[in-house]
Image (cartoon, rainbow, N blue to C red):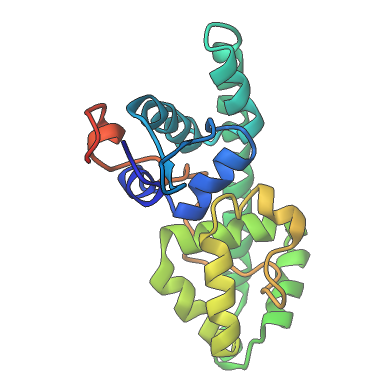
Length: 222
C-alpha cells in the first residue's frame, strides 16, 4: 500500500496534483485506513503511471480519461491528433523565434542598454504577433527549459522580486502552458513573459518521467 506522498513522489508528481487527479475521477478514489488515511494499491500506482505517460505525451486530461476508460478504442486517433497538434505548435514556436530574432537584429547596442520594462516587452511581443495565450505558453516553456535564464530575464525587465517568484511558481504549475492559461496565471503575472533563450520546441511535461517501484513497473514500498 502507498500513502499519497509516497505515490506522488514515486511518479514525480506533487501531492496536490495526485489529489487533483483523484478529485476529477482520473484516478480512482483511494481506500481509507482505520485512521482514515488514503491508501493506494499497486493497481492504483499502475493507473497513475499510465496517466503520467499520457501527460508526458502532452495529452489533455479529458483525452486521458477517455483512453483509460476505453483502452481498446480510439487510442491511435487521439495520439495521431496530438502528433498533428505538436507539429502545429512547433511551427508556431519557430515562427515566434524567427520574429524575435528579427527584432533583436534590428535593435542596436543602445537599445539593449536602455531600461526595458515588462510593459514595453509585452508591447514588443504583441507587435511580433503573439497572442496572450501564446505569450503564456512561451512563458511557461521558458521556465521549464531554462529556469536560471528565466529568472535573469525577469530581473532584466525590472520585475520586483516577489512578483518574479510568483510568476515562476505559476509557470511551474502543471499545465501552465495550456489549461491554466485560461485563468490568466497568478495575480500580477507578467503577460507574455519570455525571452530569446526560450526553447523553440513544444516540449512535453516531465512530470510523468522518472521514479522507481510503481513508476517503473515494480511493486511499491510499505
